[in-house]
Length: 131
Image (cartoon, rainbow, N blue to C red; front, side):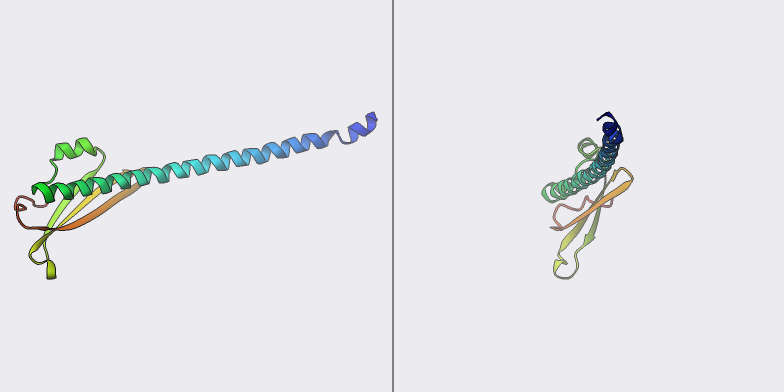
């Protein structure tokens, strides 16, 4: 019986080594996928912040006739940049003004840029130029 046990003695060790190797590969794949998901989620967060900032800027201009002051914008969205462009409407929108708000941020190495536009009435928009 002792000789029979020695014959199969290395099989258990081989199973353990193969099992640990497969487990290590799975752990590494899981860690890499988590890193990828983290980067994707960060990009989506910055994109969502850009959309919110541009929408708030358009709402402020539409409601008050003036953009959000720079110090307030930097307090609310410290890592974003904003620019507002104004142009006259064309075609059926000729009597209105086209406002285009562009917000930009950075997510890791990726640049995130969102551009929203809206036609508004020309009343009260004389003070808005290019920023």
